[in-house]
Length: 216
Image 1 (tube, helix red, strand yellow):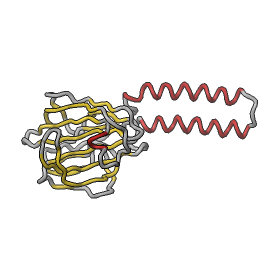
Image 2 (cartoon, one colour):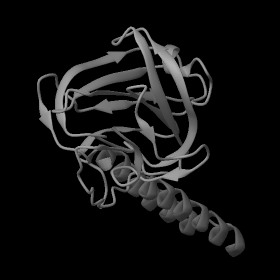
Image 3 (cartoon, helix red, strand yellow):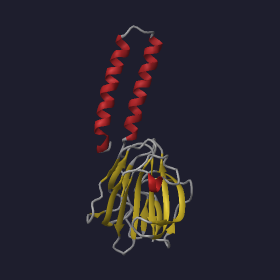
Image 4 (cartoon, one colour):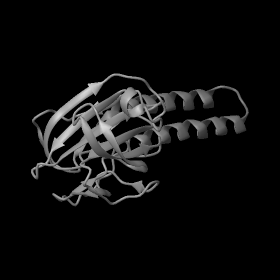
């Protein structure tokens, strides 16, 4: 299954592959070169297809757990000061996505969207310390029924130039459901209450909608 955000890119990739393959085998060049170029063309198409894949994930919905919004690797676990919404100290867990990861974003908890905002910005590499505040990004805050609030940021990286955020303020959402998409390498920061129990470690690989990052 492929994500809806990839429809146009996949169609263009298919058309270009057909055109390139036709040109490769119609022109008079050595057979070994025709075979090599054909393999490269198919390989590029495969990369596009795998990037926009949207595997089905089964979320064990829980009122006490916060699941990872995305696939990737945990690169930061630390207390930080948020100046956009909470204006105070929060526990931040950052997940870095490489271009080969699934780039679907999923809601980390169930609840009601109380804040959703897009911020234009730079395109620093996603692991840069200032990328969370200076890069193009979206910020979403979810109010859980237990009155806990969780915020997450989709952050564009050096390659990610398009962030799709489906979260609408006052919308009631379900944990694990599709909340957006980020094209190419990027990062998602999750901001939690400081007394949250962390369930992951640095450099641990996580799956969006399945891996529990922390519990209330």
